[in-house]
Figure 1 (cartoon, helix red, strand yellow):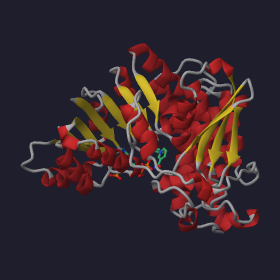
Figure 2: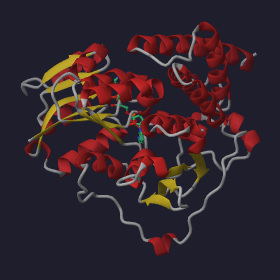
Figure 3: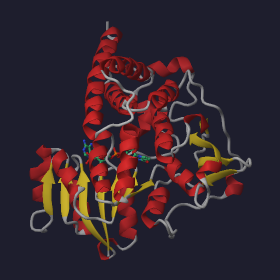
Figure 4: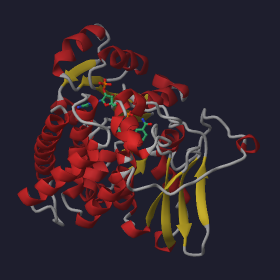
Length: 396
Ligand code: NDP
């Protein structure tokens, strides 16, 4: 029986993974080693009961008593805190889903790779923060990383049987997010609720805002560079409002392979779960005659400064990715709390990165986990300073 663990089980990707596991036979078909959540222990306990998990871990230690109570009498072990989540990744599992949101997903993913596991990677922040370390760890321990982000799953599928040396370009598609049709001058006033109204995808709150600002696409450009080892100049972004083409690979003979399908993360999760086979998946089948038209437009960098910033990050490499992701997470927190505006997020990240590059030498070829966590921490400090300063100017 295949054994699995799901990190971030209570989130949007985690729920979709749980759904596929249940449809594929649940506890009768899979041995569930560990399920982790953040604070939603009611849901975590429900999932743990259904899958008869061995261990359930919540990130927030204050939630542990509630988790224990919810699982009393089941024999399911419980634990809490970041360390317990990292230790859960040491438990043997054949297939591990990395779906914690943010940089908190890095350590458990890295620990799973050190044990040679197959890691289905939704947590793009890991590759942005520590791409070279993650890829080197996977290679060293014979582990495999399978992309779950729909764009990267599309590219991965487009490359089956192909020689990466023949790839001329990778075209990442972007929906443009909730505010894509707003006039540029109105964006500064966009509220959290407005930025959360994604036209196509139903996702976690943080990634939905990142989609509107295109910080999500900026992370994905870096993720593409790190995962496929492709030159940044070969990575393009195009707005495709229908979000039906999930990404494209262009080859040196002029052919473009496009991956097309419904907006449903269960496709790329299911592909990673069943890889290298394909299995039936409960996703909608497209009626192309009814869709009739697919449209594309070039992104305006004035609207989406994140797409410019990610190019600087790739030029610096080293610890710049860790700084970029951490500063972005802080900027997003301050947007959520209403201290800064939608268009201020990029300014916070740019200022934090400039300060970070005078604090630290970001351009390094060799990086340890400690270097990365140090850069992540300092970037959060610098971004908080920048966001607080901006917030004060806004409110005076
Ligand atoms: P959600 O916000 O829906 O879920 C996040 C999960 O992480 C929840 O289980 C949450 O727990 C848990 N969590 C939150 N903070 C912590 C923490 N500090 N330590 C441990 N666990 C924590 O996110 P998504 O499912 O949308 O996204 C997950 C990852 O997948 C992200 O990296 C995202 O970029 C990526 N991704 C998501 C896509 C999507 O369609 N949603 C598409 C492609 C990639 P709880 O809810 O219990 O507090």
